[in-house]
Image 1: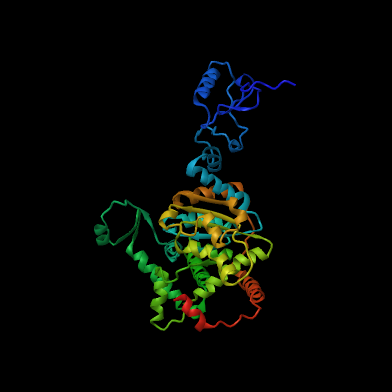
Image 2: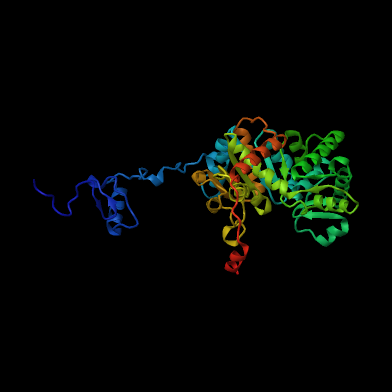
Length: 433
């Protein structure tokens, strides 16, 4: 048997940065290859001497080919997202929409939503959040108090208006107009909403210690009655959540006008007290209850701030603090304009959250971060989900709080049944100094 001459083209060996084949057909160029030969073969292809190839056999070229439909104005939102959101943050939004509809909205997934930023005064409570709740697409919520306070304006029949963000704030103050960027409203809207909260919080059923979910459920009941009296339909997120049994928590009860009014009534001798300990344990119990019930936990984070951390800390509370074996949330969808390198997303990118136990490392592929304004992303996600997914039965987690808390208590007891050995404090302290 005669050996082939060195350097001869046998039709399959790597040469000059190409995967060679007979007559140069199918040769794959590489930035690491011989540039002069690559140039020569490319020119040969152009002359028709060698067939052009697309190299789609590469494992990195399995994604959808970028060949979008022409936009003609007749496409639906879902068709626009699927057909033209192909790269950059548009692609991340498409991935988020498909993660939400194809995986997170399965019947066995419990979905927690966080709200940060002035979303409700922009009308997104009515436009997007209430439809998501009523469709069974959101099972529990953590929100800033400000979103819930400004949401209440609409349930009371009070008006918010579009405005010009370049208007003089000094002139607006003189005119009695309050501005949230390009949202304008009468100062009396604040006074009327404050008066409403003080009136209802004086009721006997509020005179006790409770979780923020209990507090907001009671508030939602009264807002719902006001909507009925005004004949305006469901305008308030609090009202919709009350009706659907969706618990709403706030991680900073005193950091809003609602909390300010609760504090004011305490000066009158009011006994309404929101207990953050109950909130921490109740939110953890929702996640654990979902997992132990044979299901999964998904989180949808709009913005960042305290609600983001309060949602994600449910898993460290279960694992690290309570000592219960768990793996982390199964699905992670985040819309944010913050950056991890400045601390705005500290501990909250999916990969980083894995190191905390917040996200199940095996489910990391089921995590999408879309760097986009929530006021742009939320309406698109809502429209896509409602177009592509049938309604889900309401889980009514507010009514399941005692059941979920019992699951947490039982597992906590089992995890901590071994007696703790006494610690010699005197011998330990010097080593920490």
